[in-house]
Image (cartoon, rainbow, N blue to C red; front, side):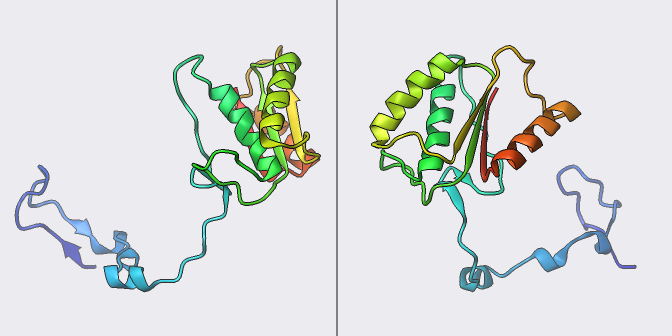
Amino acid sequence: MERYAPSAPMNGTPADSAVEVTTLKIEEAYLASDIMAKELDPIDYAIQPIASMGNLTLLQGEPKGGKSCFALYCALSCAVGAWTASRFDVPKPRRTVFVTYEDGLRRIKTRLEEYTRGLGCAAPPNFFIYVHQNAPKLRLEHALGTALLATLIEKFAAAVVILDT
């Protein structure tokens, strides 16, 4: 087995420590020119450029900073397939589930009325909202939380899920 030992200390590592070459993934190294010439599949965005399909996007900020409003607007935009501002783009409508544990029906209804008016549309038939103010927070590290989320995704055939917890 080949071993690589640096001739001089690197980042405080003693020169006598060795790394087995078999643990290195040399096949993941590319020439820059090869990367530039490579044809890559386009990214499938739910909201371009902030949320791609199959990935987790986190929204965080100060309390009362508008995160819930923004999350609901993102969910509605994903379902409608439109974004009114020019900064982002929603390429196509998708079945969307919005889960909220903070806002009640009255607040959600008021916001939906404002947002659909701004988007120039009615509430889309592919947009589902799970409102549960009095339940414990949805915790994905617990089996009950993951079971609830899996049930919502399956029941509504959701492509996009937005959690506001």
